[in-house]
Length: 130
Image (cartoon, rainbow, N blue to C red; front, top):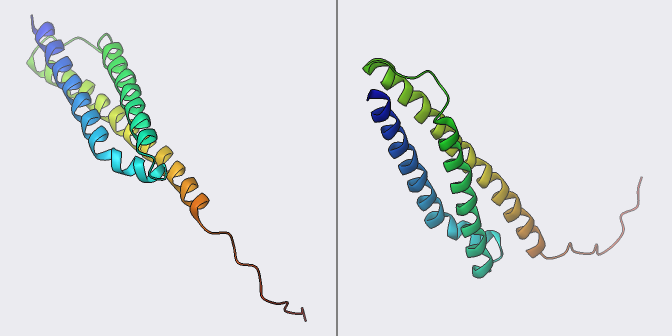
């Protein structure tokens, strides 16, 4: 019975965290994406939605796969250690996904800003070399 309670706590906590993080990123990342895609709202919203779908697929898949691994708890102490280890790994995966997305989007944003800059100014004259 302890293993079922532990698994239920793991699933509820991990899935809840994944949903909360995905919603937060979707809501707060929209403005960043709009600027990254040169104020193209439709493209930013589309990319935002695709990022959330990918985020759910990877994280929920990870949560489901890791359910099987690890030593099974046999008392309350090992159940708490089991939960903290599994939830800790889920948090690390969520954080890694977040920073990877920020890195990629920042590169897109930087490229977009370079395209919007005016071309370099032609020189007015020539300076002879010595």
